[in-house]
Length: 172
Image (cartoon, rainbow, N blue to C red; front, top):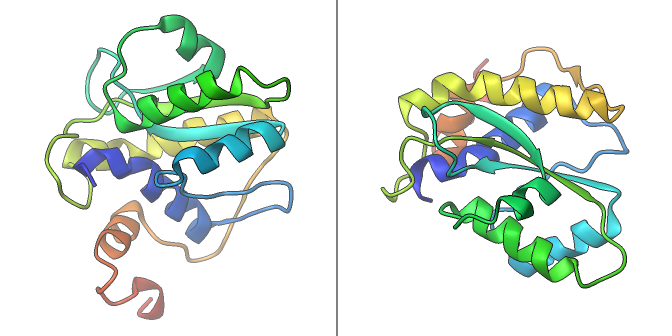
């Protein structure tokens, strides 16, 4: 991974480890799905994608925009998340049926270095990304209920960035 580019994966894992997932919500890492994402755009009423953004600002700032807003911005996309989402939105726009797409994103600090994990700046900002994601879900009628004894963001990143590590859930 390109360092902070993996923040969506870590948020997904954090949610899976810390919240009960209702039957009307599918949580998945779409980072490597490529054209398979098109299926979700066409078959689901709403798709929320969490990833990085090339917007100007300070690393760690978070935003939520619709797919339509993203397409209207038209600027050159610089992050893998933006490129993939834009490409899928363009392809799906030729089809009649497509769900609403919303992007929840964070300005990364480093998407150049090939390294698992997150920069300290982005790791500290992950609770803001979680809060925005939970707010968007709540606006759409989905409230996630916390599990007891979940994992911290630090533990999630440490474990899932290096899966050969000891699973911290087994030593809690």
